[in-house]
Image 1: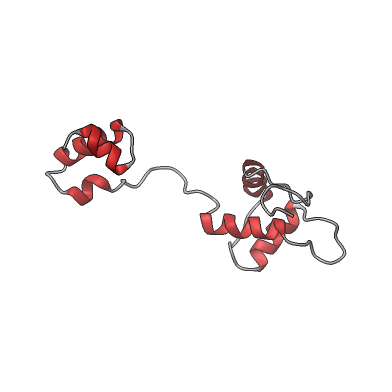
Image 2: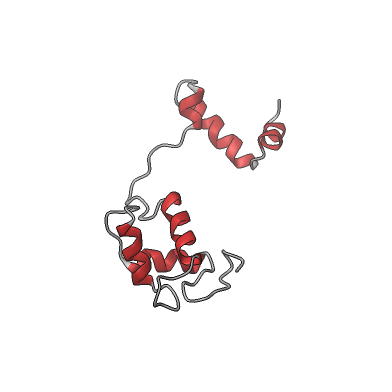
Length: 114
């Protein structure tokens, strides 16, 4: 099977096929080791996919009684209170909500369809 056929069947770009093939040759033909990604250096993400999903759901929900909308600080406090994370500042939450086109103060924020 050619590299082009493998790329097509695996639904990846050709460079990915060559990269994995070269890794396969380097590691002594251990296919599992060639395919798996090696751990990356650097700080791990502050928000996991699970926590991001919970933040999205929270931001799209009705705000606490007595408030018109969720503030970033209220979201952070609630995320800690519910035990999703030990501690968190508003900045990673702000960046995530901005990337996801969400805003805690908007009712129709693109995530909830409200």
